[in-house]
Length: 58
Image 1: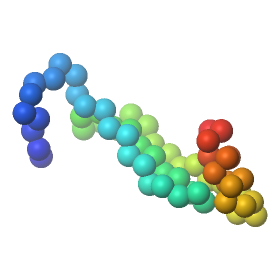
Image 2: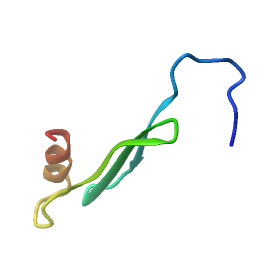
Image 3: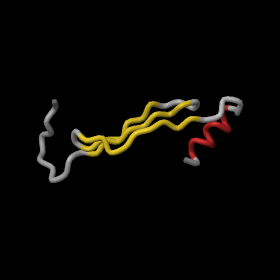
């Protein structure tokens, strides 16, 4: 595991994204603890523009 060069009073919070317009995965970790994760799914019959607009509303 990499160690930071400077000391922090709080653990680093990291947001991870698995991009896509059909399914978009996300997760948030802080230190070694998962704070939240999930998948945003869009409707397959819609256009790419409509699907991207749907993701931004979540």
